[in-house]
Amino acid sequence: MDNCLFLPSQIKSNVADLVVYEHPLNERIRIFLRLEHLLLQIDHFVPMTDIWSSRAAIYTLLDVTAIFARSDLKTEILKELERHSTSLERIRRQPDVDIEALGAVLERLEQSIHQVYRLEGQIAHKLKKNEFLSAIAQRTSIPGGNCSFDLPQFHHWLNQPHEVRQRQMENWLQELAPVRKAIILLLELVRNSSHPSWEIAKSGLYLKTLDSQTPAQMVRIGLPRETPLFVEVSGNKNRFNIRFLEPVESGRPIQASEDVRFQFTSCIL
Image (cartoon, rainbow, N blue to C red; front, side, top):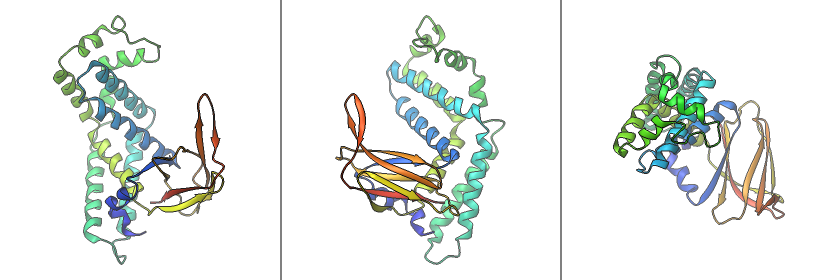
């Protein structure tokens, strides 16, 4: 393992002008990416002053709560934090390792382990028991089922001053703060675990077989922003293929006929 792991700014600068497509190669990372995606949406909507943004923030919070309700993610997160901590301890004596940066990462891991371990019961269990949120959740599966006459209490809440709504959202999100911090750290470590390389997809198709002894957590594919192509990945932790496709209005996307140069990172940690 090289010490690029501890220099995330280097890798970020390399992909600044690229659109990056990430594909998880195991269920744990898939869930972490979904949660990150939803939490970033909440970050966007909560400061917005309009009612529609507050609606969107609530619906996204309900999605987060639903993910936590489906599995024991507290155990999964703790296992992953401890696995990373053990792995990084092993490289402490390797040459060319930035000991100061390594120590800072290990300290962050220990803090997250402690904070997640201290959480009582299942993650987000207070949010799941909140009657106000539960009433909204019950209507979300019905098309148009969240009108003011369906949920008058929600309508009342939406018409409170923005400061009131924002304060309430921040109070609810506080329950998720330790988990959010842990997921951000874990994904940061995975993303920065390897240097990217430039590869060629022959006629828009790239096939890759991975070493089963050192399974990758995710793959990242970068394309220049000006390209007309997008990326579709299929496969698993051992073998996958990447197709480079061009959108067709009202039709099925077409695979590129020319060779495509792209940035590729196999994130192994």
